Image (cartoon, rainbow, N blue to C red; front, side, top):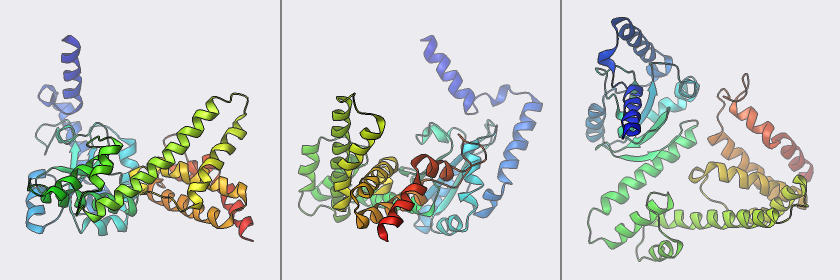
Length: 342
């Protein structure tokens, strides 16, 4: 009981619940920090709405979605700042925001500021946090706005979710309800076993976009199964050194790449990159120039979309992309692909 109460006190303190107990000097400092956040360049680039009710009203009137960015002002948030001083100042961000209602939520530890505590209400457990909502304020998708592709993929998912949910409002529409259940299962919101998902996928008049996503989901599962099965074999072969283990994993994934097996990058960016990198190395080892070229193109596409050129938290002075490229040996992969092409 005591631990639960203590956890609640910590949570309230973190999100502005104790503003009334603050001294005048503390409140003045928090007010200055809040105003400074609103004066930052990213906050001037687009016409942010600071109150969710107003954002919802505009979304209803304009027929748009709400794109919400959650940040804080009461103390520095380095991950927030990295994106706010990079992608959120870009021209493409301004263009994207013309098609949505941009909503800015700033946790300030000042109760009188708009929508304090909204982060938790919308499912946020960290900062920064970026989601897409409908005009009722319901969360449709979560995204990391590090590139235009990442944001547009999130908006595409949100529009599909909204369309499916609207259609499924009619309980007699079996196809719509099956489509919604399958879509939610694919993205992890409504767990279903493989047999039940396949059964739903066979529903007559199933939404075409959901069916396409399901087929890509099957591909993802097949690649994951190969990866896990190979890892199991390698765990049972302690005599193999690290280089040989990696080579066997690359060789196991290469056939998937040779067949052109792929899945939506945004559904699992980390897995997509791991698959593309390992399978491309496998193609290089096999001397398959065409497959190696395809794999490199996939790596670079995923990198542009989900590995941002923002300051690295792990390596001061370099960007996340620079650290990523060095870690995976991307320069070596590019050189090898170029040699095969000659």
